[in-house]
Amino acid sequence: MSELFLSLLIFAAVATGSPGGATTLATASGAQFGLQRSLRLLAGVSLGLAMLMAVVAGGLGSLVAAWPQFQLGLRLVGSAYLLWLAWTIARQAGPDVDAGVEGGAAAAPLGVAAGALLLWLNPKAWSMAVAAAGAYAGLAGNAAVLALLLGAVFGLAAAVSLTLWCTGGAWLARRLQTRRQWRALNLVLGLLLVASIVPMWR
Image (cartoon, rainbow, N blue to C red; front, side, top):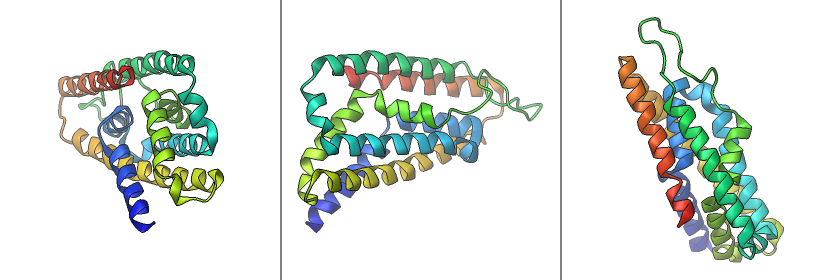
């Protein structure tokens, strides 16, 4: 049992910490707004993942896996949402280096709802949740306990990993000195977010 739980912790750490849409968004928000102003976004992603894991482990996973139309709808809507987020990031100019104030297209960081939607509209996240629910079902005696366990582990893992990515973005921002550098960074982050769509269609 202890080995299976350790395996769950490792799986959650790798799944939430590896580069993808959520980590790219956290990095971009950290660079643009800093860690403190990005906390609502990070909370939204973490809570969104925790709720998704709990719902899937509670029994919804089998229904989703058996409904191809739902999976296709998730891919279409999720792709459109990620493209919108990528466009929002790419067109940001970053802080006004000379004036010391924030500029760009975004007046405020994304919030809780935007972070949660990133997970709920991502079929890759649904597939991961279904896989985790099946692989670690032996850790709990019933679906309710499994839902609470997976929700707590993945939510906490996401909070830690996204905080690190966001802090990395804030660290990177302190090294940028011109608006051209900011535009280049935001363009790269936007393109990385677009690239995260590809695994959704495999």
